[in-house]
Image 1 (tube, one colour):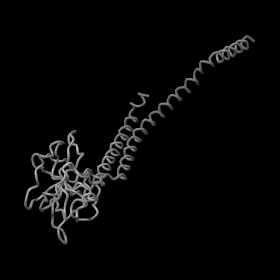
Image 2 (cartoon, helix red, strand yellow):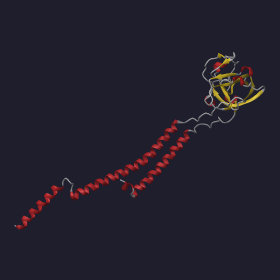
Image 3 (tube, one colour):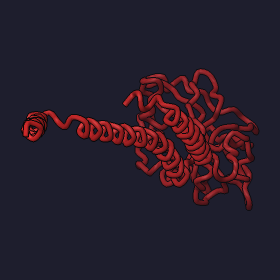
Length: 272
């Protein structure tokens, strides 16, 4: 079959198949890239004003997850809380959560801000929020499912989730339904990681990409099938030619007996 595959017509057909496969594969790659770039460009890395993204006491929009925002207001130091059960680099600790009082339509509202992370046993070292008006920059995250509020060891409310449903029992509403993870944490707190949202993938374009890749594989398969069929045809033709000349191995003795009989008959007729 290798000799058949190396003949000029086969190599020409292979070149056509590889060219088609390359084009189909490129179209598949294009569809895969297109599946990640559908829709309007993301603004997650741009710092937008909080009021432009999320209003108080409204449903958290899915497009706001991971969005970088800036908010200007005043922290309420006496309302700062700890959110327990938060690990960082494999070490147990808590988030430091404080309300930022911001201007909103019709008055003011509270924005939960995760100022940083503190290791377990180091809660006494948590600094108070700064006084006066400040600007906070961080990523928005949707509120977590409620987990309830319990009294802590020092009498302050103890939380295990950043949930507006729990915080309305601790802070004075109105509240924002999400929270901001501050990008820069004050010492000795550690910054809490908050990644940008993953780009959405259009499954329809992914299916198109898979189809193009299958076409690429099918083009090479067609070349292999054509070579195989030609090879089989040549083998059958060669077998028929061998059979016409000398017969098969099984028919050989019979054919020789027939030839010998003809020679005997011809000799007898010549003697007469």
